[in-house]
Structures are given as structure tokens and as C-alpha cells.
Image (cartoon, rainbow, N blue to C red; front, side, top):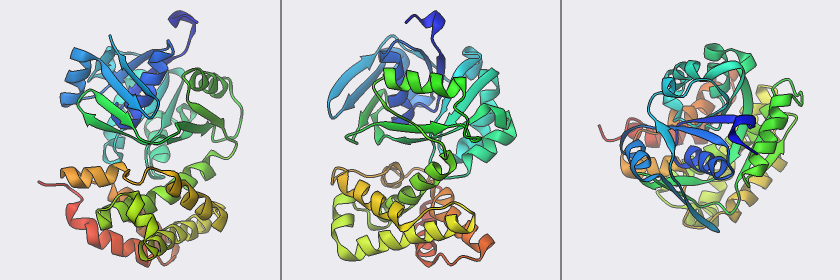
Length: 312
């Protein structure tokens, strides 16, 4: 494979997850451009991007890293990984990355990004995706993956196996990542939302990593209740989540390292802004609209609301 005949990628938001995905694609020989800002961008430009995982350590250097998508131009795939509050602004910046058949794949948390991006860029440019990759920025220019696996699930919203979705699958597989080309990507996105709402709520409300939360019967019961409320909201919207999804996600949480935390818990510890309005907050908002009770998620929102904007 040469760069001239392989798909090109831009990573919009090169933090933990985006940085890791882009680094693996770059390591596999694909042309990848990283969009970042601040100290993280400066460190990548000066020293490359260092990656650590349970079974790997490598550095992407030299690296294509910029703060301005205009420096890149149109690409085949945009991996969209910004924080949820930046979705509109970053989506608008993506206009410079869009060619006739460019696919934008949001790896963000929540269930709001795809409609927003479709409104900005056109639904024909939005492909659904989720990322089961736990990775955090340890320090500028250094990303560590903590999950024992790295899986990307994706698909077109009209359920076609399109030429670009097949090409994306081939690239992700070549990069050494798990690739699951799913038919019902909407269900997959909500399935991830199910566990992420619960995990972020419990990590943040208890200030504890996964180990103590899942092992204590009281917090495990609260985790289950939060996910049951997500399932009820999903069902009211026609998304067929079931108790089997909850059990599978509890097993998933049980498989994670006991000291691991989701990114929102790290943001809370660091005094950063929180994605709460798009996680438990979104469950409460949709519950109100659909007349579905969400008492556990309401408590989480009340407990964490004073930290939403970080230490300002």
C-alpha cells in the first residue's frame, strides 16, 4: 500500500481516543492529519505522539499535526472526537475537510452528535460509529490506552454496505483495531450510550474508579438503575434496547481494569468542563419530552451540576 492509493484521514480532536485511533492508522501507513490545540498540539509538533497500551509502545514521528483544518484540505474520512460542547464549532470547521464522498464518523459520547453534524455538513457525509477504546492523555503528546481491546463499530444509517464503509473497515482492520461493520448503527450508538451514562455517573458521583463501584452492592444497584432509565428512554424513542444489553454492559464494566475511569471522571478531577448535559442530562431531557421517569439520572445531574463548567 502506498499513501497515493490509500484513503486519507483527519482526526478532529486528537485527545485520548482520537489520538490513539489516528496513531494506529498512521503506524499502518495511512496518511493521517491530526487536529489539536494548546500544549498537546505543541508537544506533537515538537516530539511526535507517544502511545502506550497494555501490549504496545510506539511514537508517531514525524507527524502531521495542526490546529487549522484549512491546512489539510479534503480527506476521505474524518474521525470526529471532540468534546460534546464543541460539536457545532468543530463541525463547522470540518467544512474544509469535506470532499464529494467524505465520511464523517463521530466517536463521541452521547446520542446528539450525528443529527448536529448532519445539519451542518449534510446527512450524506455522516456515517455512524462508536469506539470501544478507553484512552486518556497522560500529558501533552502522550496517550495511554487502558482497555484490553480496541474496537470500532460503524455503518451507514441506511444500512447499506457502501464502498466507503467497506474501505473504512479494511483500513481499521489493517491498523490492528477491531472492526465491526454493523447493520443497525443507531442501536449500537444507544448501546454505548447505555453504559457510558452509567459509568460516567458513578465514577463522578462516587469519585471512585470502576473497581469499588462495581463491587459494592449499593453502587452497583444504582448503576443498574441508571442504565434501566436509559433503556426506558430508548424504548420510548423506538430504539429496542433490552435487559440483555444491560447485562452485557455490566459484564463489560466488570472486564475493565479496577482502577480505570471514564474521561468525564478525569475531567472532574482536573477541574475541566463536564459532558454531563449530554449524558445523564440528556437522559433527563429526553425523559421529560417523552414522559419517562428518570429519577436516578436526575439525582446525578443535581449532584454534579455545580461542576459542569469546571473550575472557573
